[in-house]
Length: 125
Image (cartoon, rainbow, N blue to C red; front, side):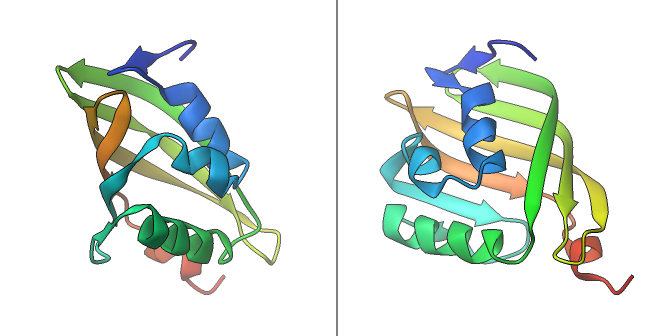
């Protein structure tokens, strides 16, 4: 997906910041008072809490890479679908499907919901 932009957000750049595990760059897409929810974890609110949650998650694996396959925008709502490949600390890779729902306000993400079953990442191999 080249140059996909919706609601003022360049989603390829957003996901590149995640794949680089660059929290500072990632937060540049996020509103100061945004709400963030990853899978079945409780939602967190505000950049400080989001930063802590994301950095904690990044520490649980060695690397990741997103393959965005579809982006649909409707007004201030955006849905991204794809696959994410995680490299575990033991060097093994696992690829999982995901869907993200974003609400955008003023060119920043105000609500960020990630739908994924992350259990296989932490399962014994």
